[in-house]
Length: 200
Image 1 (cartoon, rainbow, N blue to C red):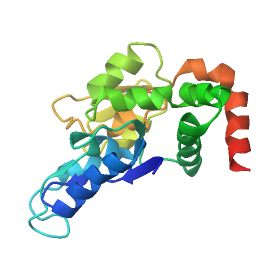
Image 2 (tube, one colour):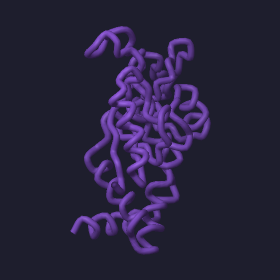
Image 3 (tube, rainbow, N blue to C red):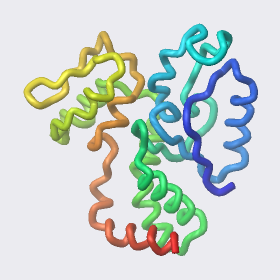
Image 4 (cartoon, helix red, strand yellow):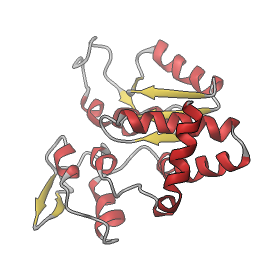
């Protein structure tokens, strides 16, 4: 297949799931981790000792622990438009003209950089990459997505309780400023036209 979308994390005790994710990597030109669980583990990091379907299923990991992932679509859940756009751009990256490949590269670069960064992310990354860079707009998405309430909004900015943070990546994936590439802004219309043309 050209582009494989993978949703959810993988249970290490489920041999079938482990084998399937490895086969996906072998058979796909581009592997996309779709959603917070596939990218970072998110809430499945809480799954211990029979909290899921079967008692023996107790260790869940993001897919990047088992295979190389090319693109992350962060958030829980990603929007339908983002999923569509990533699929189209990944396909154009593989099969498009030189101009289409250049646009696809520009569009996918921040999402590829997220995948290259790894499958762990914590509130500390928000401080380093967003707040300290003057990018935080105080929207509160990080605090709303934190499953353990390690982030509170104080004076319009997130405050991270590092002792509570479980490094699930939910906050970093939800933050609209954590992975955005400003180089793409000037090419927005061309990228949108390429997506619409490819869907015709």
